[in-house]
Image 1 (cartoon, helix red, strand yellow):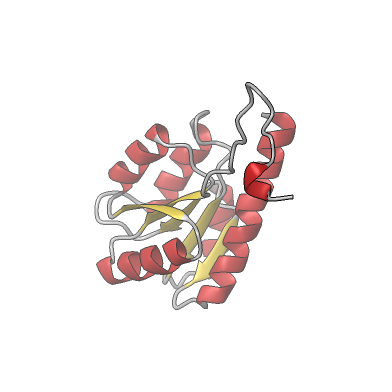
Image 2 (tube, rainbow, N blue to C red):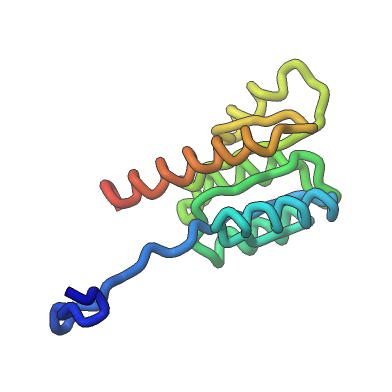
Length: 148
């Protein structure tokens, strides 16, 4: 049987899953452009922001599956951005992956206290970032389906 000729149920459309949407927040244009290109090639819809305020605005306007957040932003502290995302009911369930070159022995603990679920030190391995991102998106979509 030709699959193109198979009957579709009347009145029901087959809904394809949407691309996972990631907000990438980093003031370094080179990092933003590189990650944007690489993540889009892996099938992600990527929104970018160079500033904390811009990231918060986008996060409140869009339905996100994850946020990749640099801590050192020119207008706001990344930990503050993370905390605001966690405290806002519209974004509180979006996993935050923190990327940072901050050399502080307590940084992971501070990120967790601000609501960040994952931490990667710069420079980071892109494959590790993708593994973490895939798990975060999968968990977000599963929990959203079960309890949303």
